[in-house]
Image (cartoon, rainbow, N blue to C red):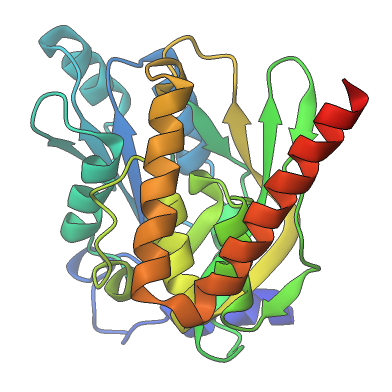
Length: 281
């Protein structure tokens, strides 16, 4: 057994007399879904194919009665829990409900139009089990595709990123996709991220204020930009702007020591870009 495998075993080992079915899973995966069948099946299959097997998948479903039955037919594995959520609940609230119901030591998200590489959970668990300080967040490269593959650009090299650098950098622009973040369930439960559509962005910034992060420089999560029913297609750009502005303003008020300079840097960058645009015109 190599060091990578030993790290996974150290974190997940149990007493010999404890049946596996009588203990909580190591990782809880939260997947909001609404009337997606083929895409949700791809996402579920990517979880079933994980090299790390000690997980639960919580599907927070808001589908029609007919489609709920189809999701149940796909999610027959005993590690999958399908929970109904109130009709028309936002993705942010669905994620919050999922975290509240999670049994795992760790929690991660999976949008139903995304999917994981087969070793994603194993890679993250190995990071957390290796004693790398008090981590609050690990994340990987999310590859976006709609015919072309585009890995999300990252501002850090692989390894530990000391607090609050992740939070400050995220404040300027979000470089961590929801499906590529990973944290302890107890940490996620201490932070209210249910009130804004950018719930993952808000959660990861809050974690980055308090704890070190760890960047895994590997493409382990995949984001499908081709789905017609993506959340981003349901709202105006003005709505997204107002939501992002409300996040930044609240964070700035609550923790100016961390966010004041990024706020100034972001505003200066926007002014410079506007000036360059006027010059070119």
